[in-house]
Length: 341
Image (cartoon, rainbow, N blue to C red; front, side, top):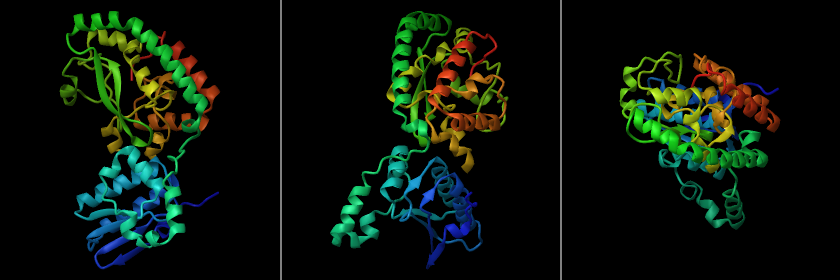
């Protein structure tokens, strides 16, 4: 059993007014807490450095928890007026940054500027080139399962056929009840925190987002829920109770942004409030259904419960387990007390 990483695992060296933090070979949930603490100790001192450089020269793996710690440290540095830069970013880490769009957020020193010796060393250059082809991190077996992806594609095609059949009657009822757009699009966070546009049939009034601040949040933690949300239209309540509002998400599944079964897809403002361990739920693709769906989605009242159910899915995952959750979901749709997420 491995021990909990300490600050000693992230040595800090100083060069004038700059603190250089050396990141370990892996930056997963086990190491991420220690990494965050090391950087926070630098920013919270009275004589904090003017610049913090994160050196990734040794890092060959980073998952969503490591990414969460990096984002948290970056925000803390900004709040305290400390410059924050990444150096010696390996192809494995850069692949994660590219996936999430954070390569455009973090100041990154190029390898050529900090390791000029590689340009004069053909063997090292070949190594560097080969490393740039590293695949994205396999944070969970479900992400790499071709059979799960096959089931997703097959299910999405069937689901889109059903959506096409029901589209016209649903569209007509939405327009009669509350004229406006048929579809509702919202930004959610997927695997590794990558943002994507999730689609639903509109179940709220057209200005629902503007009125959100006027509605009381009845749950605890980093998500929003109100059982009697006044923004929901009459037809919207029916669509939510029967989960018909979620049919357009089969398009997200077909595109690979979601899976038929996975974790609950969070909004960006929810992710903004995550602590490092909570980023683990982003190690898998979000799903149209999952543990939260079949275990009383309308009765979940705390973010801790969401985390527990999401991690339970990750721990128990198998193709058979996915199929069981799909069958349970179909059965629960006929339960009038199932509620909506």
